Image 1 (tube, rainbow, N blue to C red):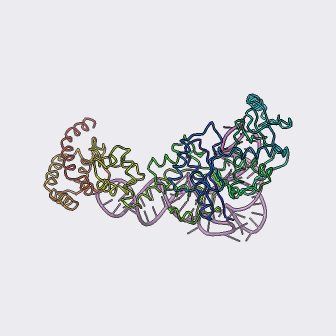
Image 2 (cartoon, chains in turn green, purple):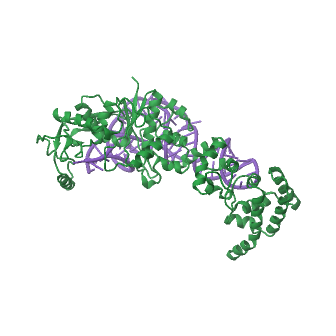
Image 3 (cartoon, rainbow, N blue to C red):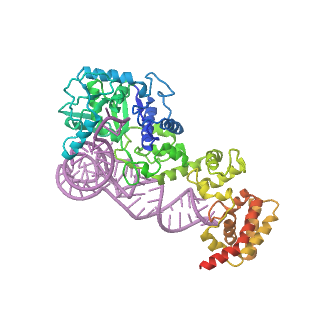
Length: 491
RNA sequence: GUCCCCAUCGACUAGCGGUUAGGUCACGGGCCUUUCAAGCCCGUAGCAGGGGUUCAAAUCCCCUUGGGGACACCA
């Protein structure tokens, strides 16, 4: 029998990288085994439901290339895949459980439950529902808004869950309270809906976050009551922030779409997340989607939580960026340049060719698609200020003005403003003046870009073009007296 | 507080009784070089502690400690 895996998010917030990692593992295992990957939307919490979250979820999955064989938009033999559209199914099972004595109606008010909790807080003894209605024989209907249906947890004994990674885990039944199956709004809780659907949809492996371990005893009990065989559980270790607590909003970006807008490539997020908590057991780090599918297995999943390391993510993104064909990279960078206001949709005021050149020059110098703004604004804007350290080092020497003037004049006369003639002019001048070429190159770079780092100067000049270069050189020369005065005053 | 899970360099990890404890990121040094990157070379750095079992323990067992998670009419 082939495996059937599901990813069952609830659309209550933006898709968290932790959940996405879970989706990736499920997807990878399904693809590795030639099984099915099912997307099921657990939208039974009508208070927290958010259409934006649902859209973001689809966007995120599609961005990463996590296609589903069954689910919303795809359909499938077990449709519908929105739990909110399966209410009657849950009611049927809930009613059956009540009739068979596994569950009961409860009409305790919120107020009573609140007081109960209050009293238990001081007492510090058993927590949870006190089973007030367990023996009252209340008759009802799942749609009744003044009642809930609770599961009748055995008063003694232990429940064992079998986890693929951790073996058998035991829970004392006395620790469990009579949890709610159907809420007073008629919607099922996660516990009921999840078990019913996993059974009906013939899910073979439940791969989900670690945080579910403690509830899984309830799930086993439900499977038993329903006379069903539980699937294989694979509880995945959670993802931590740098401070080792569960990765959350306060650690910064947590939505997969945040990473998209920060300039990370989808294949990087996929590769990186796949390696967070799973290892191919060899030394590979950069792995293609196909390699990941081919290598993925349950044995490689780690048992301990792992820290989401942005530094390594940056490295990996850089690796992928460098490996990309220039044209593809330029295309990926485009939306970022537009967003940053450097160009419009038609490359104006520049050209596709210009953007391609900038991309080519910057390819090995950026870590994210958004880095151009920081790394090389001079390709799009005139430098308004000059790097401070650079200024002190390269602009304040006697003779810098005349040097710039000399070079500017010679460059202006060049009819062929390309790499080697430019280099020739500079090297010749250096020789003529009896100085190292660096003595000319550094001040020139600063004058042209305002920065002390960047692509090779000659390439940079060619890309910017003669007019721009000459204009910036003249402007820099004019400003040097001011700069000298300013820095002299400080020193 | 109760229950549960986890424990190898700062981070991600390999190791599944016998290894000089390996790789990657980061960090430090060097090479290359017009700067910054990239690339290449080298290096610093780890089995939480204590008991067992065994000829032999990072690997198996127990305890301690530490970290994390769960304790809803949320998932």
